[in-house]
Image 1 (cartoon, rainbow, N blue to C red):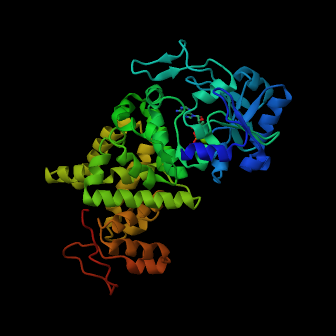
Image 2 (image 1 turned 90 degrees about the horizontal axis):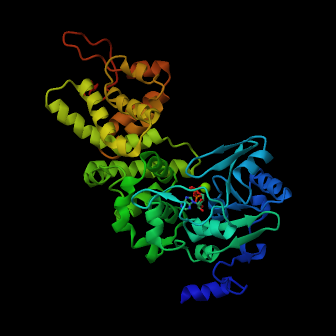
Length: 443
Ligand code: ATP
Ligand code: MG
């Protein structure tokens, strides 16, 4: 009812018949062509000059409508990848599942995709119905029907500043509703990652997932197990580094979607210390991203998995293994178990390990050790990690404060802060400020 009413208010044009698009003029959406990046504008213009249809499409149009600065601009066209490639000197065809063209313009990379045809008999799927490959080209209407949510199926033409809208996406965005195009069950079966996208986009844009799109998620969540790990990692990184990780993970948990992603995420979140730590780290990542600062995947995964490492490490030490070899073994154990599903890359895994290995070193302030630790290339990340541990109550706040002072101190002051080695029979030299217990604790 309300939706119908709003639609009548928002669309002065007669309601579009099925398959017919509403053409929304500037006065009703307010997006100036200048809001589109120079590279995307030039790409569209060049395609149009050569007689092709071309639009800015997808997330960028949606974000502009929502008043958010788009991360990047995608272009959709009726030109084939080969035709696009021929028009732009700095371009290359990429992708297998979907072939697209990357057009380089200034410092930008514009993704140009050819209108896709509706899924047909030639679409290749796996035994669960997941679409593996499909490169059949079609009309703009077919392309719109293939997109996931109505708010993602908007085509902006910088030339006349109109939006072509086949699925009432503009009205849905104004109503703050995330609606699936077509039958949600079939769309999730074709591509289970759409469930994660639903959660991420709802959190990012403050939308409510429409009941029809929300209801099937719980029962279909297990389909995520068939998604290749590399694709899951991509989507998880988008989600965790979106600046809305806290909201996304809350929603994931609510929808019962966190199970297959990090096998132990649910366990982590149920340990009192681990849970506090994970949420703190997500909140601090969100704050960084919102402030325009870099947030590294390695740091984030290091925090998500830390309490697993602590548990595995403690078990090994209890079984009599020496502290540092036990830590190495515990790290490998956790990364093997967790990393498999998410295909955590070697590089990210190396970052994660460096951060973890710095932790016992930050806890051992004996002798001149702090002078060496502070020179480590990943010291800053290790220290930030320590701050979260202190904030979550896992380690004493005094330790974090001490390092903060140490970092700020000049050479003289640093030397004065050093604690003597705790070696029996050795006499303490001179008087020193007390610095906690001089912790050479084996952490
Ligand atoms: P963001 O860039 O903020 O992560 P986005 O919606 O732009 O979000 P992209 O992955 O850049 O996400 O995809 C661009 C567009 O391609 C989407 O807006 C949507 O129209 C379409 N799309 C992306 N993924 C899917 C999918 N799994 N199923 C159907 N359409 C999709
Ligand atoms: Mg995008």
